[in-house]
Length: 151
Image (cartoon, rainbow, N blue to C red; front, side, top):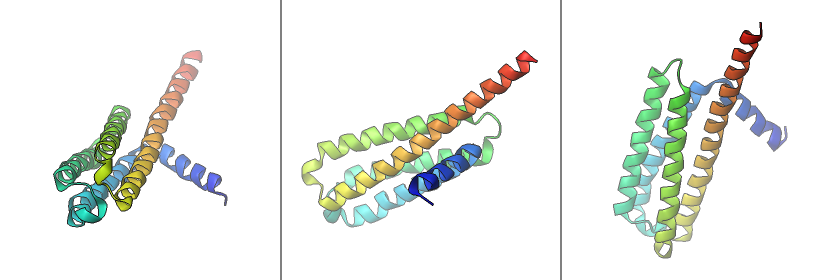
């Protein structure tokens, strides 16, 4: 299977089960919080990002994780605004991270730049899938309403 077909398969499965995106987002945010709050702080010199920056980023990731996991368990039908909200929050987190990387670029090591670049790529993919899911489901919902009104 080609990479494009594999990616499309993942995308189709995500879009068809939007609630699962909350779980994926929440688990990813917990992983980010763990990496920032334990690994990167422990090896601060190897990454170059100061602890005073890593701890608040880790706390923010924990808040996002709790939100997403809460949505997974408690949001049933009207999930669109909640998914859009976490996508926007992830986008703001990404802009914050980009700003911190730019501001602290001189202190970052190659490993730090690689870590934050990788994190931004993954989060960007998640944001893309979340917004595409909201958009596709809105289009399907609108299409179904139009079909009912025609009949």
